[in-house]
Length: 281
Image (cartoon, rainbow, N blue to C red):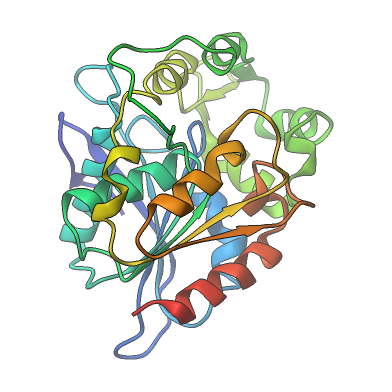
C-alpha cells in the first residue's frame, strides 16, 4: 500500500503482512531498524498470534520517499508511525520495534499517550542521559558511508551478505526479504540500495538528538524491552536503564541473539512478542 502521507512531504509504503483475524483482534504494527524496511518482518509476522500484522517502510527506506530536507530528526520517524496509525484507523495496536524502530514507537507513544496497547522493543536506540544538541559522528555513520551499495543482481547481493557478518546470522527468509525489497534497479542493469548510504549515515548521526529517554514516564502501557547478548557498547548496554525508567517496563534478555535478533531467530522472537501481547491491556 502506498500513497500514505507523512510530514516533510514523505509518501510512505505500508506492508499488510497478514490480514487474517476476527473482529476485535488487535493489530500489530512492526517498525524496522535503520537501513532496513518493513518486509524483513515477514517471517516473524507469520508466527504471531492471529490478527492483522502491518509493517511500514520508514521515510527514505524501502519504497517510502525521503523527506524534503534530509536532516532526519528522529521525531520524523514518530510522525511516520502516527501517520500509519491514523490512516489505517488502528485502534490501540500493539507495537513491535527494532533498534531505530523501537525508539520511533516510544516517541510516538510519548507524543500521544494511549496510542498503543503495549510495546515490545528489541534493543531500542534510546540513549540515557542528556540528549545531544548536534549530530554525532560515530563508527556506524562512517561505516554506512563505506557500505557497498551496488551489485549486479539481487542474488549476487544475497550471496555476499549470507557469507559476511553480521547478516550471515540472518534467517534465510528474512535475508532474502531484505534483499528483495531493499534494492532497486540502478538504470545500468544492476541494483542499488533503496536506503541511500548518505541517508543511513545521517540517521545514525541524529540518533542521540531525540528526547525519548527524558520522557519515559509518559509511556503508561506495558513495555517489554528485549536484548540479545549485552556488550559494553550498543543499544543492549542501556536497555536495563530504559526498562527501569518506564512505569510499566520489564527487561528480557536472550544472550544467544545479537543486535539483529528479530531477523536472526524470527520464531524465537515471535514467541516472546506473543507473550508480550498477552500482557497488554
